[in-house]
Length: 84
Image (cartoon, rainbow, N blue to C red; front, side, top):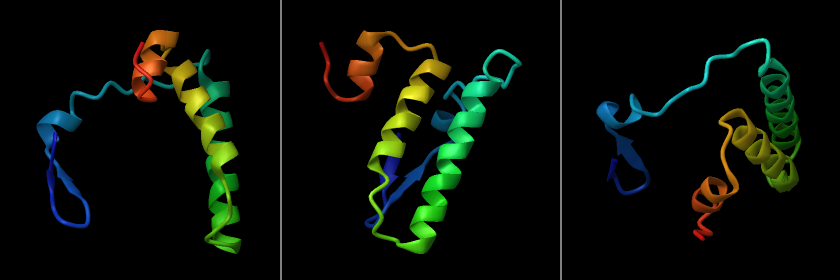
């Protein structure tokens, strides 16, 4: 999916284009707003202290993204590397 460039990866467009992005609708707008709010909190915390522990907010974002994509418990396990 990507080429190792030493300090990072170069991702090829033909693979990135295949990632489904759910459209924002009236039914999922609250989830999107929660994600945006958490991202803003993380950015503010990191601006004040780059070493801030934002892992709890990041976990909340993960859970909201799973909900946004309507992932099953099995799919979540795969994403988290805990394949069942």
